[in-house]
Image 1 (cartoon, rainbow, N blue to C red):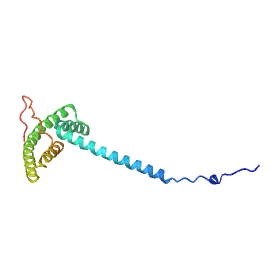
Image 2 (cartoon, rainbow, N blue to C red; image 1 turned 90 degrees about the horizontal axis):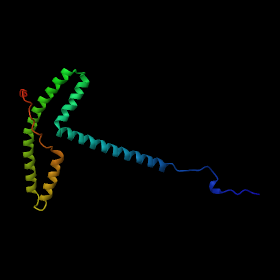
Image 3 (cartoon, helix red, strand yellow; image 1 turned 90 degrees about the vertical axis):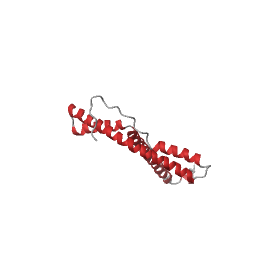
Image 4 (cartoon, helix red, strand yellow; image 1 turned 60 degrees about the vertical axis):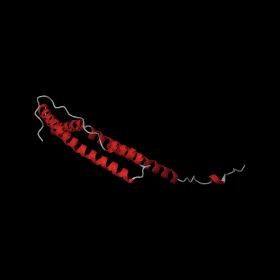
Length: 154
């Protein structure tokens, strides 16, 4: 009896592999974009957190100096005192600058509002308030000096 052959299966399977490669590249690129965006967001948040919490900067710097220079307990305590004193001076300077920057922001907000039509001003104030909350950290909390310590040298 004669064998019947199917002409469509006559040769080796010829599949197109370009869709698989295109999909692989698309998945890779989307992962790259999402990963990069997430990294940038996290780094930005960490930087803002450090800026808004000056004590965190001291703790991070103290840990790095201790590790890098192999400080003993006495040196570590001395460096910690220096960092605390300098941080208080930084905070005083930051408070002074913060009040000046706040005044400039207030002028900016009011002067731009004067340029805008009356119906756009409420939207501008809402927009600007959001902008300031994201980019202008709150002023540092007042620091309480430890009794018996001499005031930090400026």
